Image 1 (cartoon, one colour):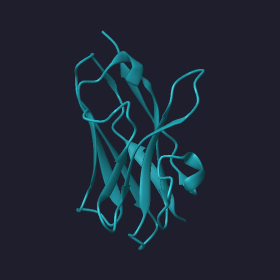
Image 2 (tube, rainbow, N blue to C red):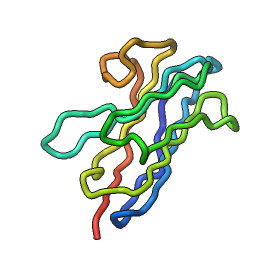
Image 3 (cartoon, rainbow, N blue to C red):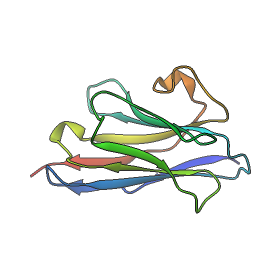
Image 4 (tube, helix red, strand yellow):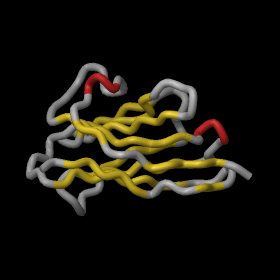
Length: 126
């Protein structure tokens, strides 16, 4: 069974850094589009970053450009990291990783994805 598993969420202070990880298990396919989404209480889910693994093409929401970096983890078949720097209280949310075995013309839309992880909580607070 193919699964998406995120990890790395925790509480950090404003201005701090955190790296989230996402791995796809149960699949030998590696040409995935992997996306990171977040949802804060009372808000809609927002796509923040995505990467097309085959070519390393990355996509970012304006709200995180220059602070978040998504990269492939080459130690695993299909895995990525999301490095988050200069974190702000408004970055507080449940972060989800999602996967699609192909590409999309709208990589930051949740409708582009087929598989979703359970989420990992990021809290930015002093």
